[in-house]
Amino acid sequence: MKKSYVLYGISGVLIGTIVILLINIFFINKGEHSVSASKIDPTEDKIFFIYSNPFIKKSALISTSHGEKFNKRYFKVPDIPYIQKKSHSSDDIVLLAEHEPYYYTLNNNTIKQHKLSNPFAFWYQGENVSVKAYNVDTNGNELKVKDKKFNKKYNLTLPSLVTMGASDDKYIYVIQGMSIYVIDRKTEEIIKTLGLASYADLFDHSDNYIVASSDHELTIIEKGSWKSKFLKYPDDLDQADTVHYDEKSEKFYVTYINKSGNAGLLEINKDFSFEKFELKFPYMNAKFKDQKLYIVSQEENKKGIGGYMGIFDIRTKKKLNEFNLPEETTKVQDFVVLD
Image (cartoon, rainbow, N blue to C red; front, top):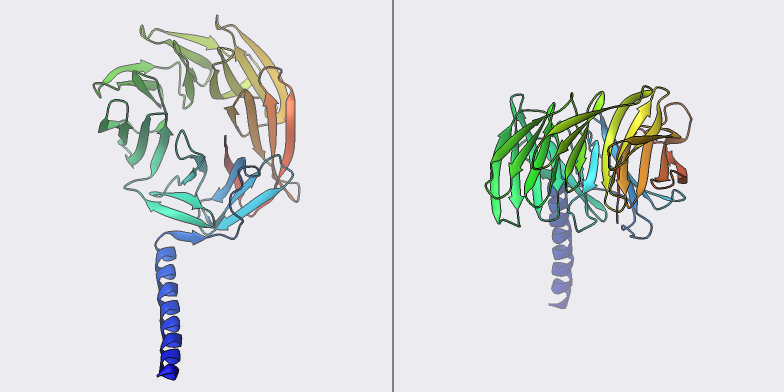
């Protein structure tokens, strides 16, 4: 009896092992991608970079604190050019595909794939409201709004090419091409369609104003009256990009690329006059956080270097830190700075 019990136990272990392997294979094939990396450390993993390419089935998620040490995670998924926080109050991150109906989450040593009805146009996550915009077809984008403040869930359809959303206590704002749509959070209705100076895909807002970085000038819209005015860029500004409202200084900031391909910063005063600052740093895209400006750029030619990160104080315009990014088979596309 004892011998047969041991044999039965071994057989049970073998059968159990095979079942677990089959389950793992099934779930990995269905959307889980194992990665070889250490657990996320809040003290070391402060800035996450996504490296990806739509034609190469290997992406890299690389994290660091100050650029001295990098934690690398690789997974067999192409076409993930966007990374952001999953919610306003947590540091969980999500990776968004551009052309496929998926997004991905990181759970220690696993990247999990989540199926969507259509590819994301954007995913805005505010303090008590979320807006998920989907590229349904060439004729329109579907918006799914979940508003905890008003206890509402609803869908809206807007023209295609929506790129960004934001909100305040009363309204949700969505930018699309040459327009910003204003959605009343209480009634669920689009109450205004605000025209822009020209095409734009980025904006920010204060209590009183919305500022969008149009092609050749800033569009400034006063909330409530919804009146617009336009602010022409300096002559050497080649392309304006990220807009940020800093609550402490009560000023808007706009990053831009000059004609040499380097980064610059416009500081917009309360009367909408502006000062221009050349940062002398290569530019691809940028993000603001806690009165700091983070700029990332790619490197094409230098072996061993995949790009650069520069961190600037928006008050003094001084560079606080600069470091090289590691080289990978794909290029760095986006980054997120955690709390």
